[in-house]
View (tube, rainbow, N blue to C red):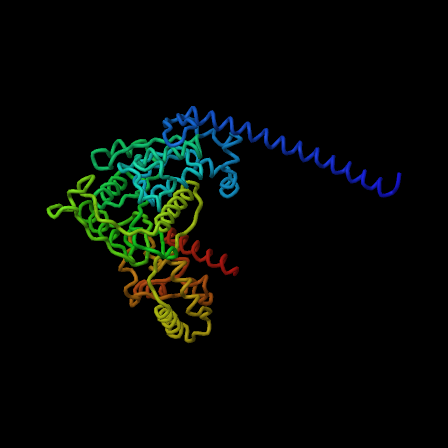
Length: 458
């Protein structure tokens, strides 16, 4: 046998061996895939979802959420979350119960990502139906779903995505008369995705009264800039007519002035409500209301923005459930000139107290970090969220930076923001006195300044 023939036989033999191995591997994958398909199909059937599509009936399959992550299919479906949070934190998410009220552009996307992140139990509430015009922003609805109640539409689709989740859908309008029905059962979080002021205020007031954690969506319509979306206390939201109205009503009707986290946009609305157009001369907007008190005029909506609102809400809630600690970006409405003022004030104070500004180791940009990121735009003695508000930064006339430890230079990890009178009092005391007389304040400041040390690798 010639040399070339032997080479061809070797190549053919190696190819056959590789092919056999590849075939075996593929068969194993296909077999595993088939097993999973059968498993999921059985779950769908037990959950009341047949393979018929839009007309399928929907039921609820009761499962033990504490054991869900022991299942091979579920754990692999959630493997990226498990890798991100860790198993114990993901179990907190999987064992949680979240209520989502309002299932339009914002609520459907929020609920969808809560489901995909492994939340074990969802209560979905909305009185409305899927419309053709809502398909530009809805998370899962198709043309086949038009005319279907939004709650049932989501439940149907969700049961095909994560059939182990306990999903309850209520086709009803939230109002004070159904508070006990909707908010009982100690939900771990409530998402307010309602766009009607009366209903929204009633829900938020009920959550505050019951001590339930709630996250509220403000106006997402008529906006286009995704970079301006924020999470903050209700009192810090601005450029949003819905926030303004909700703040006023909560304070006036319920004595609630803040303490509610909201998702909102700093962007001013790009468009106005479209004018009401009656088909008959004697008709009024109220003739077209599905529910009394709900708007009938149309808000122009770029579908991407409510979707991002919903994704932000889901991300916030999931990280809270998993107890992943992070700080939302503070809403501090200062321009660079304000930070320069604070920097100049620091230099003057150093010269007055220490005779020189040589030990000031920060510039205006680092002052911005200290004021915005460390002290969140308010005095170190005024860090409670209940004390924040939209008027917080209308003036910088009463705030200044001073050294925490007088024996160390004025660097990023040794400056605190105080009011003038607080700064005077601080200069006349010692750290030992503060530690002895105000241990909580001392520990809080020490913790914040250590954050600066870590971030600047000091």
